[in-house]
Amino acid sequence: MTKDKKNIIWNIIGATANAFNSLFFAIIVTRINGINDGGIFTYSFATACLLYMIGVYSGRTFQVTDITNKNSDSDYIYHRAITCVVMILISIAFVFIKQYDMYKSIIFVLLCGYKCIEAFSESLYAVVQKGDLLYKVGKSMFFKAFISVIAFLIIDLLTKNLIASCISIVLINIIILLVYDSKNIKEVKFIKTKFSKNSIIRLFKIGFFTFTLTFLANYLINAPRYAIDDILTNDLQTIFGIIIMPATLMALLGQYIIQPSLIKLSECIKDKKYIEFKSIIKKLIMIIGVLGIIVIFGAYILEMPALKLIYGVELSPYFNGMMIIIIGSVLYSLSTILSAILIAMRKTVGQAIIYAITAIFTTIMSYILVQKYQIFGASMTYFITMVSTAILFFIYLCYGIKKYKKEWN
Image (tube, rainbow, N blue to C red):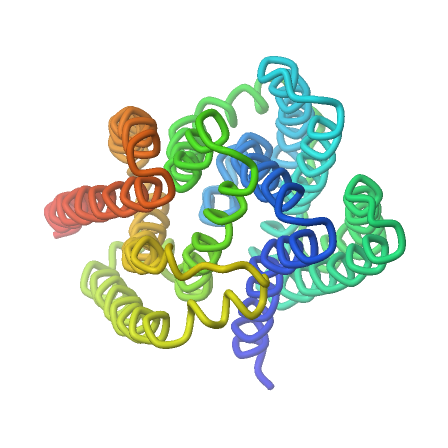
C-alpha cells in the first residue's frame, strides 16, 4: 500500500473513531447512569469541546499550512502548552461563575482536561502530518478513542461512578501522548529553536483571527445547549444531545475530504496554480453535496428507530427537529470545508467577522426559540445558523478566488 493511501485510510479511521467516541460515551452514560447524568455529561463534553478551541488556538490546519517556516515546530509546541494551561484555568473559572454543584463541576473540569490533552496532541500531529506521515496521526487517534471507550465502559459498569470513568480516559490519553505521540515527531524533520517570547507573541497575533473563527464556529454549533442549560432541564439536555449527535458526526465528512487536500491546496497557492486550485475546490464541494444528499435520505428512513434502540429513550416527538438538524449539519460540513480553504488562503479576518455577527444573532435567537418551543426551538436555531453561515462563507470564498485570479494572472 502506498503512503498516500495509508494516509487517507488511517486518517479516515482515526477521525471517525475520535468523533464517535463522544457518541459512545453518551450512550454508556445514558444507559448506565441515567438520563439526568446523561444531560450533565453531554453538556459538559460539548462545552469542553468549545474550550478545546482555546487549547488548540489557531489549530492544526493553520500549523500544517504554514509552509514558510517562519515559525519553528518547537515554537508551536511551546505556544500550545501555554494555550492548554489557559484552557484549564478558564474551565475552572467557568464552573465558579456558573455556580455548578461539586459533582457537575468535577465532571466538567475532568472532561476539559481530557480535551486539553487532545489539544496538545494536535500540535504534535501537525508536525507528523507535515512530514507526510498522516497515517501515524490516524493510528494515534484511533487507539486513543478505542481504548478510552473500552476503559470508560468497564469503569462505569464496575463503579457506576461517572467521575471515576472520566478520570480513566484522562489517564489513558496522557499515557498514549507520552508513549506514542511524542516519539512520532522523531521520525520526521523537526525544526527546533529555543523558547522565544517574541515567537510566542507572534503566534498569538497571526493566529488570532483563525482562533476566533474556530472558537465561534464551535460556539454556533452548541449555542442551543447553553440556552437549554439555563432554561430547561438535564433530561431535555440529554434529548437534544442525542438528536444533535448525528449532526456533530457530519462534521467528519468535511474532515475526511479536506485534510488530505490541505497540503496540495497550500502548494497551489504558493505556486499560483489558479486552475488546479479552483478544480480542487469544485471537486470538494461536489463530493460533500452528493454525500449530504445520501445522509439526509438515510437519516429520514433509519435514524429515529436506530437512536431509540441505541439510547433506549423515546424520541418520536422530536423527529421533525432531528431532520431539521440533519439538513443543517450537511451545510455545516460544507462550511468546515470552505473555512479550511479560506484558512489556507489566509482569509481569516473576514471569516472571524462573519462568525462574530452570526454568533450574536444566534445567541439571542437561541434563548428566544428555546424559551418558546423548547427542543424544536433549539433545532430551529441550529438550522438557521448553519444555513446563514454556509451562504456567507460561499460568497466570501467566491470573492477570495476572484481576487486570487487577478493577483496570479
